[in-house]
Length: 481
Image: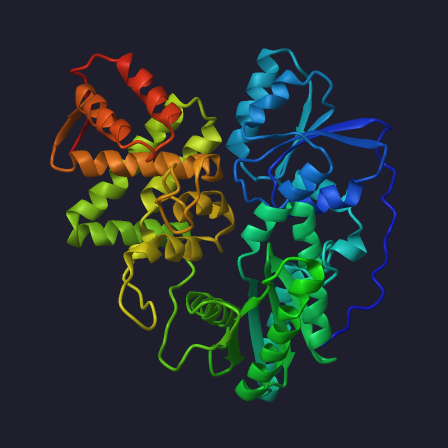
């Protein structure tokens, strides 16, 4: 395994005029690398960042830098001095809509997106550094991890060499961020990364997978050796809590071994990740490896997920119609709230896939627990790059505004808006599931029932949907099945 080498700071090339003013759309990994690169550079100013996912990676750093954050990218239309709009989402329809709006207002602001947008942050970036390193922890990044994993698999196939993969997640890290703030959270992540790196052997390689997740590749390692190394890492992190003032601090660690647990990168990551999830289910702060014959759910492409919903619908008409109705009603609620087209598109997909965690897969030991399906669904979808925006909507679509929901018991504005929309759409269908033809008056009636359940849904959302429906004739057909 190659060592990290000297990856020092490389100065940003001064290729732009002094005072360049940017507006960024998309708060993912690319945006975080961009922010980390240009902070402190007086020649570049980011006037705002548009991102609808409250858990996007770039948001903590953006807040630290004092960059205004908007859910609606159309906020840029009210900023008169933007030199360049940088679209890091890959959404071409978004660009086309924004170009049209700029043209209507007589604005000549340039939009750079797609490959061009990503090339820009690559040019701005410290190429030799960011190509393989996570800027917060100093560990390798996820791109380098996958490249190294493929190399290790190739070596294992050629020479018959075993190796192990560790998938690690900080327990209750969200609580640390909520209690102490994101700056302290970043300090904790840096300390955890240092503890992991210092607990590994010289030939091992650690990486930050994303958020509070870490991975490690252990060459020439069988099951017993992997469990020992993982246990050493776990104990080292467990001792950090008191010194950082964040006790308790711990890791849940999943282990997979080549070739016993798989011979492809997807198989190995899937089993190690699922083993980590099982360790969390058992209370966290432990090391776990799946037993023989235990299969985790697959990583889904959106086509696979939609196909599964359709196939289940052939056997279960309610399941299919429920997904379709929740999708359609989510879109209507989103429009009533005045959400932008990109958010409405995400609501359409989130509504269709909100119950994908109920798919017929093996869930490991124990009986089926209904309250786990949002967690399963989020797990299945989070590895699909273009579906990451709906993961919070799927994960939190059973949270109640009063904090009595699940799986996290979030309250009020802690719940992502998209998740509240899907929750309301889900409630409406369950109240009208035996009505084959929905008229506007039917929806208004059940909205009043939902409103009586004080604390279930944001009352402002119910009011907005009621207002939108009231503008239509009460006997107008809304949906039929």
